[in-house]
Length: 166
Image (cartoon, rainbow, N blue to C red; front, side, top):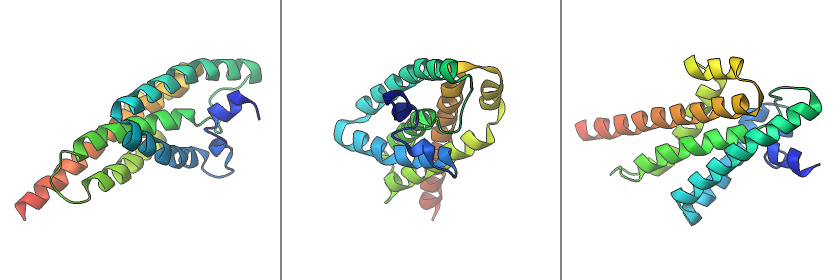
Protein backbone atom coordinates (compact mmCIF):
# COMPACT_ATOMS: atom_id res chain seq x y z
CA UNK A 1 0.00 0.00 0.00
CA UNK A 2 1.32 3.44 -0.91
CA UNK A 3 1.79 6.18 1.66
CA UNK A 4 -0.94 8.15 -0.12
CA UNK A 5 -3.47 5.32 0.16
CA UNK A 6 -2.47 4.70 3.78
CA UNK A 7 -3.16 8.37 4.52
CA UNK A 8 -6.42 8.57 2.57
CA UNK A 9 -7.78 5.36 4.14
CA UNK A 10 -6.69 6.44 7.63
CA UNK A 11 -4.28 3.59 8.08
CA UNK A 12 -6.43 1.16 6.10
CA UNK A 13 -9.66 1.70 8.08
CA UNK A 14 -11.43 2.83 4.91
CA UNK A 15 -10.75 -0.52 3.29
CA UNK A 16 -13.40 -2.14 5.49
CA UNK A 17 -15.86 -4.07 3.29
CA UNK A 18 -18.82 -2.80 5.33
CA UNK A 19 -19.49 0.80 6.42
CA UNK A 20 -16.01 2.20 5.66
CA UNK A 21 -17.09 5.70 6.71
CA UNK A 22 -18.23 4.51 10.12
CA UNK A 23 -15.13 2.33 10.52
CA UNK A 24 -12.93 5.28 9.56
CA UNK A 25 -14.74 7.49 12.06
CA UNK A 26 -14.39 4.86 14.79
CA UNK A 27 -10.69 4.44 13.99
CA UNK A 28 -10.11 8.19 14.19
CA UNK A 29 -11.85 8.59 17.55
CA UNK A 30 -9.19 7.01 19.82
CA UNK A 31 -6.45 8.80 17.88
CA UNK A 32 -8.24 12.12 18.38
CA UNK A 33 -8.80 11.37 22.06
CA UNK A 34 -5.14 10.49 22.56
CA UNK A 35 -4.02 13.74 20.94
CA UNK A 36 -6.61 15.68 22.96
CA UNK A 37 -5.66 14.15 26.32
CA UNK A 38 -1.88 14.03 25.91
CA UNK A 39 -1.10 16.97 23.64
CA UNK A 40 -4.09 19.27 24.10
CA UNK A 41 -6.90 20.86 22.16
CA UNK A 42 -4.59 23.21 20.28
CA UNK A 43 -2.55 20.30 18.92
CA UNK A 44 -5.67 18.40 17.87
CA UNK A 45 -6.89 21.52 16.07
CA UNK A 46 -3.58 21.95 14.25
CA UNK A 47 -3.47 18.25 13.27
CA UNK A 48 -7.07 18.51 12.02
CA UNK A 49 -6.23 21.61 10.00
CA UNK A 50 -3.14 19.95 8.57
CA UNK A 51 -4.88 16.73 7.52
CA UNK A 52 -7.71 18.77 6.00
CA UNK A 53 -5.33 20.81 3.84
CA UNK A 54 -3.14 17.84 2.96
CA UNK A 55 -6.27 15.77 2.33
CA UNK A 56 -7.57 18.24 -0.25
CA UNK A 57 -4.35 18.05 -2.27
CA UNK A 58 -3.88 14.28 -1.90
CA UNK A 59 -7.49 13.56 -2.87
CA UNK A 60 -7.08 15.78 -5.94
CA UNK A 61 -3.97 13.80 -6.93
CA UNK A 62 -5.66 10.46 -6.22
CA UNK A 63 -8.79 11.37 -8.21
CA UNK A 64 -6.67 12.54 -11.14
CA UNK A 65 -4.65 9.31 -11.08
CA UNK A 66 -7.67 7.00 -10.72
CA UNK A 67 -10.30 8.99 -12.66
CA UNK A 68 -12.75 8.63 -9.78
CA UNK A 69 -14.45 10.96 -7.29
CA UNK A 70 -15.16 10.52 -3.57
CA UNK A 71 -14.44 6.83 -3.27
CA UNK A 72 -15.86 5.16 -0.16
CA UNK A 73 -12.45 3.96 0.99
CA UNK A 74 -11.24 7.56 1.36
CA UNK A 75 -11.96 8.27 5.04
CA UNK A 76 -9.41 10.92 5.98
CA UNK A 77 -12.31 13.37 5.67
CA UNK A 78 -14.17 11.41 8.37
CA UNK A 79 -11.19 11.85 10.70
CA UNK A 80 -11.21 15.62 10.20
CA UNK A 81 -14.97 15.86 10.75
CA UNK A 82 -14.92 13.58 13.79
CA UNK A 83 -12.13 15.54 15.41
CA UNK A 84 -13.92 18.85 14.86
CA UNK A 85 -17.11 17.48 16.42
CA UNK A 86 -15.08 16.07 19.31
CA UNK A 87 -13.26 19.35 19.99
CA UNK A 88 -16.47 21.39 20.02
CA UNK A 89 -18.33 18.94 22.28
CA UNK A 90 -15.37 18.35 24.59
CA UNK A 91 -14.71 22.08 25.05
CA UNK A 92 -18.25 22.37 26.40
CA UNK A 93 -18.17 19.14 28.42
CA UNK A 94 -15.19 20.22 30.51
CA UNK A 95 -17.26 23.17 31.75
CA UNK A 96 -20.21 21.01 32.80
CA UNK A 97 -20.69 20.33 36.52
CA UNK A 98 -22.29 16.90 36.14
CA UNK A 99 -20.68 13.46 36.10
CA UNK A 100 -19.87 11.77 32.80
CA UNK A 101 -20.16 14.96 30.73
CA UNK A 102 -16.86 14.22 28.99
CA UNK A 103 -17.90 10.66 28.17
CA UNK A 104 -21.23 11.92 26.86
CA UNK A 105 -19.38 14.47 24.71
CA UNK A 106 -17.40 11.65 23.10
CA UNK A 107 -20.51 9.55 22.43
CA UNK A 108 -22.63 12.49 21.25
CA UNK A 109 -19.91 13.87 18.97
CA UNK A 110 -19.49 10.48 17.28
CA UNK A 111 -23.24 9.95 16.86
CA UNK A 112 -24.01 13.51 15.77
CA UNK A 113 -21.13 13.62 13.28
CA UNK A 114 -22.24 10.33 11.71
CA UNK A 115 -25.83 11.63 11.59
CA UNK A 116 -24.85 14.73 9.63
CA UNK A 117 -22.29 12.88 7.51
CA UNK A 118 -24.83 10.27 6.39
CA UNK A 119 -27.93 12.49 6.22
CA UNK A 120 -26.14 15.41 4.51
CA UNK A 121 -28.80 18.08 5.07
CA UNK A 122 -28.74 21.55 3.53
CA UNK A 123 -25.29 22.96 2.85
CA UNK A 124 -23.55 19.66 3.63
CA UNK A 125 -25.50 17.91 0.86
CA UNK A 126 -24.98 20.78 -1.56
CA UNK A 127 -21.22 20.68 -0.98
CA UNK A 128 -21.20 16.89 -1.40
CA UNK A 129 -23.11 17.10 -4.71
CA UNK A 130 -21.69 20.25 -6.26
CA UNK A 131 -18.06 20.69 -5.17
CA UNK A 132 -15.71 18.38 -6.97
CA UNK A 133 -12.24 17.23 -6.06
CA UNK A 134 -10.57 17.21 -2.70
CA UNK A 135 -12.28 20.38 -1.53
CA UNK A 136 -15.72 18.81 -1.92
CA UNK A 137 -14.69 15.54 -0.29
CA UNK A 138 -13.15 17.26 2.73
CA UNK A 139 -15.46 20.25 3.15
CA UNK A 140 -18.75 18.35 3.54
CA UNK A 141 -17.23 16.40 6.44
CA UNK A 142 -15.74 19.53 7.98
CA UNK A 143 -19.18 21.15 7.98
CA UNK A 144 -20.78 17.89 9.24
CA UNK A 145 -18.20 17.88 12.06
CA UNK A 146 -19.02 21.44 13.05
CA UNK A 147 -22.77 20.70 12.93
CA UNK A 148 -22.26 17.48 14.90
CA UNK A 149 -20.23 19.32 17.52
CA UNK A 150 -22.88 22.01 17.88
CA UNK A 151 -25.67 19.43 18.19
CA UNK A 152 -23.62 17.68 20.87
CA UNK A 153 -23.28 20.97 22.75
CA UNK A 154 -27.05 21.43 22.64
CA UNK A 155 -27.52 17.93 24.06
CA UNK A 156 -24.95 18.51 26.82
CA UNK A 157 -26.58 21.80 27.82
CA UNK A 158 -30.05 20.20 27.75
CA UNK A 159 -28.85 17.49 30.13
CA UNK A 160 -27.40 20.12 32.45
CA UNK A 161 -30.70 22.05 32.47
CA UNK A 162 -32.64 18.85 33.07
CA UNK A 163 -30.43 17.89 36.00
CA UNK A 164 -30.77 21.38 37.49
CA UNK A 165 -34.56 21.12 37.28
CA UNK A 166 -34.61 17.83 39.19
